[in-house]
Amino acid sequence: MSRVRIAALLPEHAEQVLAVYQAGIDEGDATFETRAPDWTAFDKAKLPSHRFVALDGDGRVLGWVAASAVSDRCAYAGVVEHSVYVHPEARGRGVARALLDALIASTEAGGIWTIQSGIFPENTASLALHERAGFRVIGTRERIGRHHGVWRDVVLVERRSPLLK
Image 1: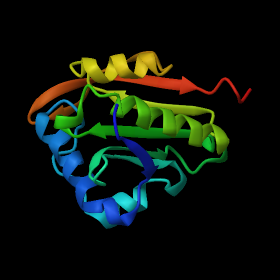
Image 2: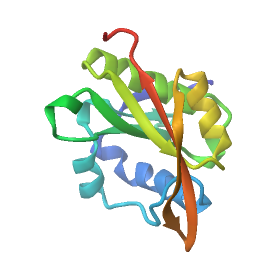
Image 3: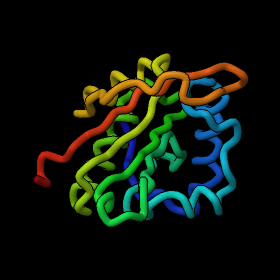
């Protein structure tokens, strides 16, 4: 992975981050969403301490990762849900793994004990990436939602921090 730098995801990255998000949405196997949100909604939903971008040598966004709280209940204070997206032209270069590693480091430093996500079973690259990064499959939620008129399953994955017992 040459000349890729991981940095905090900032408002200056908004346009490129949302474009990468929309590219993933358009491919059809990343999310139930059909349109990327505007920056205000995205910014409000993502935890500031747990969002990163991968930048090339010219400062272009190659991908991003961000986490959101799963609940405001105290019992779930250490549980987040994450998303990771990589520009189609930057895939296969270790970008997603570098982003996940940054997220894991920040969540562990921040006292987060569980990172979770739901992944379409057809998204085999994401499932393999998450397995390599230490996530385990919890189970499959069958026909959990409709996406473009078709019922879709979601594979639940999680990574429990070995540092926080």
